[in-house]
Structures are given as C-alpha cells and as structure tokens.
Image (cartoon, rainbow, N blue to C red; front, side):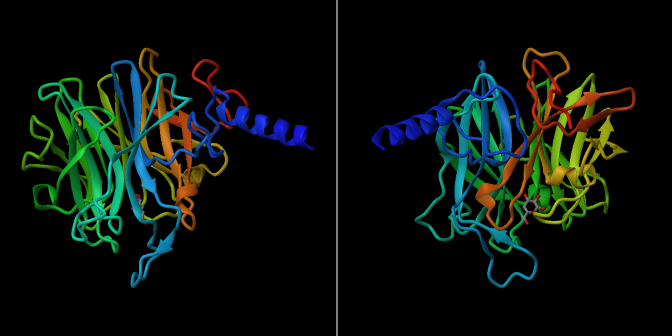
Length: 339
Ligand code: GAL
C-alpha cells in the first residue's frame, strides 16, 4: 500500500514538473511549481531574453457584486501576478508584482476593487517598467485607467494613480509600444461604445491630452494590437460581459487610426463565439519570422479563477489573417492535431 501511495505521489509530482512543449488551449495550464497559472486578461513583455506574463490575480471565491443588475461576477482582486519564461510554454511564478492595498479601504487597489487587463511596457529613456490597467469600483462605475511603475520587471510595482484619460472614461484597455519608442493607450470609452487611442507622454505615465475615436458606437472592447509589415491590427470583442461573442479585427496604416474593419479572424468550431474566449493580447515571438500568438481568455464566470487561456497561431493571407482553432500546437511544428 505504501509503495502504491509512493508511486502515485511520484507520478503526480512528475506530472506537475514535466516540461510543457506545446500550447493546449483550454486545458489547465500550470506553472513550473505545478500550480494553476493565475494571470487573466494578461499581457506579455519581452525583456533581455525573457518573457514576462502579467495578469489579473483572481481570488478563490467568485461572487456577484451586490446591487448590480447585470451579471457582475467577480472575485476580490489579488493584484497583478507575473510569470517568466524563456520558451513560452514553461512559466515560473514570480509572485504578485502589484500588491493590493489591504489597509486603505478607499484605495483604487483595495481587494474590493476591480483590477483588470494589466499591460506592462519598458521605457528605455527612464529605465522604468510601466504598467497600465483597468481600475474600477465593484459596480464598474469608476471606469478608470490606473498606472504603476517599477525598476524591475518582477516588481514590486508602485501604484501611482487612476485617471480618466483626457477626461474620458476608460474600461477594457491595452498599451502599445511602437518601434520608435512612442507608446499608446487604447481603451474602451464613451460608455464602452467607442474605442479611444491616445499617445502617452515620453515617460509613459500620462496621456498627452488628445485622442482619436475608433469603431464609433460599435461597442468594441478587449483590444489586442500588433504591427506587421508597417500595418497595425486590432483584434477586439463585442460587449457582452464575461459571455463570449464574435471577435473582429481591423487594420490601419497609423497606430491611432483610422481603422478599417476586416471581419472575424477566427476559423473552425465555435469561431462565431471566439472559441468561447475573449481577446487580450497578441504576442510577437522573438527571433521567429512572422510569428504571432493570439491570446484569449476563456472566462468561467461562476469560478473566475478557473478561467482558461487560449493561445492560438495567427496565419496570414493576402487580405489579412485568420486565427484557426488548434487543439495542440508548438512554435516548431505549428498546427499539429488540427481538429
Ligand atoms: C468584459 C471585459 C472583462 C470584464 C468583464 C466584466 O466585457 O472584457 O475584462 O470587465 O466584462 O463583466
């Protein structure tokens, strides 16, 4: 009996430690300690040979925000986590790099508040790592963008403030740093109806005061942006809370637009529901020609911490690109086990 127990525990330990060598969308993804990766609505920064994955740290208990009519499922916020990797499959837990403020009940980052979609960029001029995130009140009425800063990619980040960028409300957001070092905040605004894009100041800590209006009255959110061959692409979702809807992508010659909508890039089963996912980030793979990973969250609204990650390949064609569903794939053998 003792031998059997030993065998079982050895197998479990081995399974937890076994190196990952493929992306298996929707399955439980564990870190190098064997714990579930808790980095939702995430974004990835590549710095000095290492990828850093930042995301929302969801709490164990999912509940509905009291007094809110719509399905405002949430957890206490645990701040922002960070995981590091050299190969994009195996992720080492680096800890909570932006910690919630458990003392000041009025703080933007108190556990009762909402911290979503954190994105980090490195500012070469100041040598600082700058994090932007969606900050909200439990009923999502604060609708602000928060900013934090750190000297190291693994924190700790110091929270600075939340703002209504250029006097406008902000919910789902992302940050884009262009090749020329200029950075931009892209955020759902105007009651989530219109997506605004604003350049950041040279230190990346504020918006410059002007913005463009994109996808006007189209209610697009969950923006994920990347650049390829001089063109900028934004993938976004519709506006249905944690429930999936159809993704859409658009192209522009300039990061601030105007954007031309090209349709739903997803192909395969449940493509009209974004494979039950929602966009969060597009990752250019370092050192691999034309290789980009489309990252989605598959929200589990009744148990948010158990939301899964869908990382899928982007395949380019003459008019744009597609994001095909693939059960299992790796950067070397791209598209194995296609359904
Ligand atoms: C989604 C949004 C998520 C989260 C959720 C709350 O529309 O993309 O980041 O805010 O609503 O219901």
